[in-house]
Image (cartoon, rainbow, N blue to C red; front, side, top):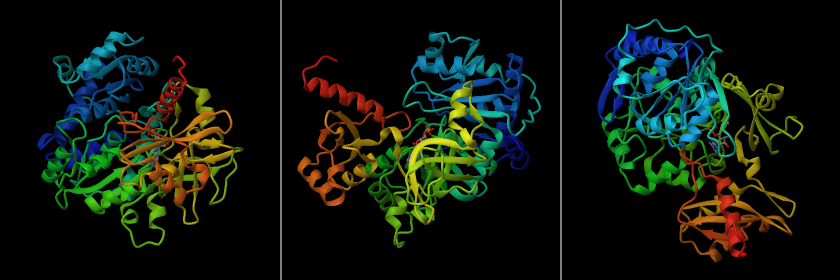
Length: 509
Ligand code: AMP
């Protein structure tokens, strides 16, 4: 089974059902979507592409995203969905690195890529332009029958450090991820809907296949992004709508005060970054028991552990707080272990690197055999995330290893300090980092968005966590640095903190 079979099936059985919507308007039914994919595949062939070729797509969310992905697969090619907020030079790096000859982009991204003249690129086609439409002018072609281990999606990691690497995701990976979504994350009835308010180049796009397999509607907001008022009106219009959201988006929805009609929101899946317990509680209070969590990474997309809705909502459970602060239990299509520094499995309660094996784990990194061998050593995907299981099989993440602070020889996981600080009503957002220190190695520094008083925060920490974990310094800021997916960029925060320290000593940058 490859990705196009589901489109063929949906178009055959429910041709008139809406497949893609733009705002409240139906953009394409299943018959049209399949016909467009078949014609685009012919157009790509005519443009000189062969099965196995990579095709980069650099566009903000748009209703053409589905015909592009499925047209690329119909031609037997692999899609390279790129974060549209990247700089032209970063997009050009991905174009050249992936060996993309023909690339699709929105106007702004098309100009930015063309200006960089990446090696090997023959054509940039602006989505929606006359050039673009010309690709659909030929006769439809037969869909390429991809083998399960052919690459479908080249997922460039969000790259919070260094050059991004391309995780090669096969049709088998996407199939397993989709099945796991439909059974455990968000069981979906025929015709159900998903709203793409988060980037379709990332988590939200990875969920579009599930709704297509269930004859559902993929809704692209007209704003192309995340606007709480628009989410309220679109979910009210479409009803039974799910969406993927970064924790920061959910927080914005809660604080925006928007009203969402009952039955409008089916499931809101958060992931990509930790959501703090206090935020989960306010989201539940505000919007009801619609929240589920997934923990994954580009290398095992959307699939490592999950916290389903019924567990998030089970307030009566004696360990409810611990559970909603965890990343949930193992997804049924993978095995997950916690390894020590010598790659030996650790028992429940002990902290180590999280490793994953199973159907969703990538084929490897594109053109990077060293990184592939290192990351997949011993047949396990080494995630770089640190965590521990409890006796019931719930995995708690303790930050990425590089985010851990070592102060006076003790390990401090920023998240546990952040969880405590966030319980203060005067803290809207917080990020805790380590600042190099001559005597202690590192000291804990908290960057706070909000009005909370330092003395109060210190007292709060003293009442909840070990003394050595409490921040030695507080820095009040307007905003925290975040990437397009709402992930706080600790590397950037550490760099700006270093500048702050140098500045306070009167040193030059
Ligand atoms: P990406 O490959 O860009 O999707 O980033 C994946 C990384 O985001 C993971 O390795 C984790 O560090 C982090 N992450 C993903 N999901 C969660 C989650 N539910 N809770 C906390 N961190 C997460």
